[in-house]
Image (tube, rainbow, N blue to C red; front, top):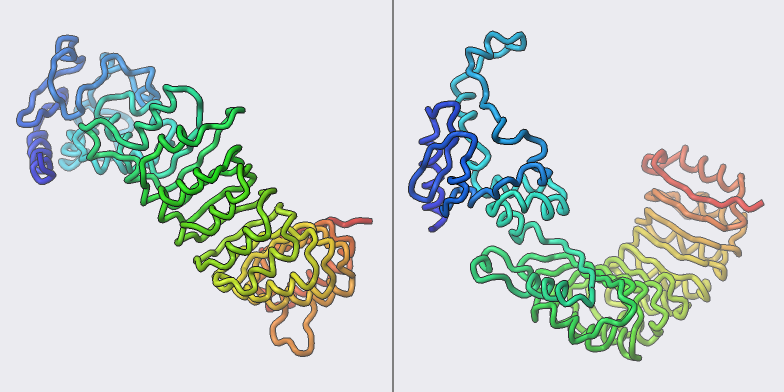
Length: 447
């Protein structure tokens, strides 16, 4: 049946509802309607017919939370006539003819797209575990692809779980394949495993379809076995990926990160490669040479890069598109920090363990005009004079730093004392900082 025919049939049923008696319930078939009374008899429930609600599951009332809010249909009483309501002490409004018409329209008379909108307000777990059990119709609605744009996959050695996941991701029964295919709807995917033994690559890859073009976000953080074949599969299966998280992954092979960072994903905008111990400076250099619209980059926790984490960004094709940057400051000095000035559009700069940075780096901080978040932790070589200068208007400056700053983290910086805090608060109160009341600061006063 086409959509136009279905709509016409729905409108016909709605028109026939007007004028029905108040103690009657209407269930529509495809080309006819029948009138029945509550309670629904067992013989009627056993009938093999296609109701508009596609056969309510018998006795599925209290077990389903969506039904537990209502009384059992056998004790359900229809609304009282308006004449009886008029005698009630709560009668303040006379029911109009429009109210009578609306009272005749039941939940199952609403079109499917309205049901879908209602379902979007229900928590996914509640929707899948409870609502889907109400009826075959609700089961079909809940499993529409629109509700499966974000999924979290827990890998398991269980054959049942693996088979179920494979069917879900690759294809469904022919009767509903047009309504739902995971590869046609899933946009965000998180993959994790709690198994101690590595999950075989061939089994892992067999779970997925050859290509999922709508996938935009992939989170495989702390995956215990990131292999060469696996990253090659990711680049082919998710060609339009925009966000990638491989934080804390364990690579098996010397070229895993090189393949991951230098091949595929031309539309990548956000990438988290923090705490990857086997990420080499050469892998990072190749990544920084490729033209991608990178906006967010995190290599915090990767201590092997040192100055290279900043220096390779200086001439990177995405230096000007970067807006958020998270680096590990271990073994980074002022020379490396100076290279970051090429990233002129940063609005967040976070560097942990700034133990080798001096006041010279604080001077470079003032060259970022759009900086809204500044995190410089463990700056043990920052001095009182350097910090005071950071928040002071110099003779050659027309705008005081930090004109756009909203969050400042100078925790574990010994030079931060009451005088520095007073200077900062005094700077905020005099302007031209935009609404200094929303500036959040984090200090660790070491005495």
